[in-house]
Image (tube, rainbow, N blue to C red):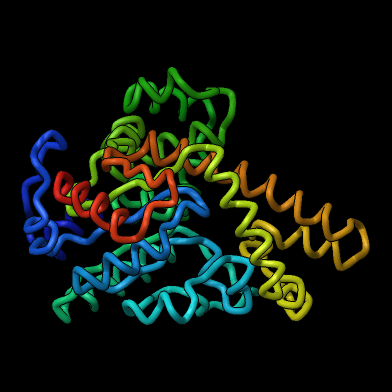
Length: 330
């Protein structure tokens, strides 16, 4: 399902307000458009999203590549019981660590969950830091078709010179931008055009559009020093809550779960390859780097208003800022 089809079939179409308009809490509360609460790790998404869902009559849909895993609740900072009591939570801790997970599967599960929430008259509140997953939900998987085995075999059977000539006629932009001596690149570019009837660059341009019709959202941020301090507190809390024992108890870990920040570091700790202080510092550094990548992604990929939570604001003030921002993005 494409972005526009999803928005039209699942949610009533509502015009977007200019971010320069006066905030309107009534718009935020009455609109049935799903809400996205995104931002870097440790910024404070989880609690704020739960409180928004509680106030708006919504339910949380997790959008994190690693919080889906059972057995990694501590290391992935999954919502605790107190937070879950504020609103129903979905797509957390349901998948064995041995199973792979990707954006395509997330989109399928998220759409099914959102449809169920909406059917019960509730508002989906998508909360997470996996930018690619959120972008895939709002825009589709780059709107590029999956390889077609039959067509691929037909194209693979043709000489490279013939493939180049066809691509230059069908999609000259792609022909000018790829290595025409690389058969795999030429075949893929031609395959995209033959399956969609549109150049790959045109399809990617739509995916790169920062607007997300059918959704409203906010990007949470904090001053760099404060965010880094919160990251360190988060890592220390993981150790205090038993992250080492959690990793020790894991069975076979699949390739997706293995990418969880902190997992490799604690595995190295358990093998005696680093001390606990070294492990903590490695986790802090890896998390800081990840947060930087997250911020860059959200700033470049979405036009949602940004909400600065710097200053350890009380939750009531954070909620007020979020509601105002959602009023401008409804």
